[in-house]
Image 1 (cartoon, rainbow, N blue to C red):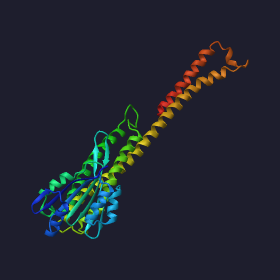
Image 2 (image 1 turned 90 degrees about the vertical axis):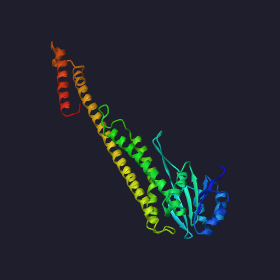
Image 3 (image 1 turned 180 degrees about the vertical axis):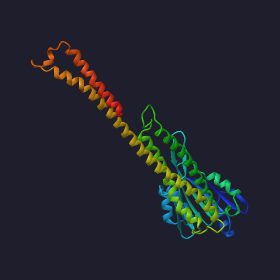
Image 4 (image 1 turned 30 degrees about the vertical axis):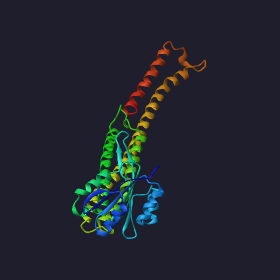
Amino acid sequence: MVAVIVGTWVWDAEGHHQVDDWPQALSSCRDGGEGFVWIGMDEPDPAELQRLAHQLHLHPLAVEDAVHGGQRPKVDRYDDDTLLVVLRPLEYDDATSSVETRELTMFVGPHYVVSVRRGGHTPLKGVRYGLDGAPGPLRASAMGALHGVLDAVVDHFVVVADELGDDLDELERRVFTASGGRAPGDVDAAEIYRLKREVSEARRAVAPLVEPVASLARGEVTGVTKRLRPFFADVLDHLTRTEERVAGYERSLTDILNVHLAQVSVQQNADSRKISAWAAMALVPTLIAGIYGMNFDVIPELRWHYGYPYALGLMALVCLVLWRAFKRSGWL
């Protein structure tokens, strides 16, 4: 795949505008002491990323994580003033009722942001336009851009959590509603496991971010000023609640799976009882017929005039007694 720099934008005293010569724009921001440059990359190859890293003097370990991808969500600090941020934005596919995961890696420095996206659409465009109307502490700062991206990604987490919650409610309704007289309803274990897998996919994107965002909210990361901390704290609040919801979904699905398996076991036991009851009733005529079908000359009842109807009546009577007994005990 050909590497692409999708665009470079600068936020400075003149506002927000796109530029071609980002090194010059970055130099101007550094000289002026305010503003930042945002460089957006889409599916870059290692060579392109290494060239950009060399120009920005990025730490080799941070670049290695971005090159290889597939990293766990995290916020790592390098060289005291550069952050490596790995995010896994989520989207919910209504057509397949599944969670789709993207990958977004960011380098955040005093006057620059580099975003590297993989796997499709991410909410970056809306964030860039939203910075123009952001509150003062967030406007025209790299940390403000980081806050905007985190806020947008977490908002998508909330949407996905809502959709998964709806799927869980529907699954619960079907599991605990009898269908056709059968306790397990119309749900099988594979369907429960599929939803559990989607919830786990979402949690792997959400849970690892809680502590890194908490460190931002506490101001433990260079560049997060006292005025910025409340904004990161707001993101943390939404993120924590979403993580708790998704964790609750996992627990609920485990309980639902256990209940479903118990229902199936109970139903199988009920079926076994019915089969056993009918087999017992079928055994009686077979037993009686077998006794009188033995090839012995001396069997008293063989010479009875009413022996045949007596045998049939005995079969019917014993079967009726068994049927009533099984019915009363709930086997039939």
